[in-house]
Amino acid sequence: MRAVDPQRVIFPVGYRNRFGHPHEEAAGRYRDLGSRMYRTDRDGALMVTFETGGEIRIEPYRAVYRRYWQTTMIDDPVADTEEF
Image (spheres, one colour):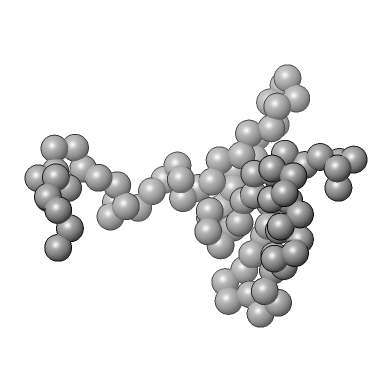
């Protein structure tokens, strides 16, 4: 794997994946190499863009288009209080 030296890895993981992918041993090898790992079950759809300079950009849908209940509203008085 060091010969390839993957900077980014995409694991297409389905809902209720009965095979348990990605296997922890395989994910651990990528983690040890310092690869940025994306999982479709966690990150949602991934938009992969190949730039003209050879750069590859990956945008996880769930990070770009967060659900309204995951985003703090501006000047939200509830967000400034302690959790109850």
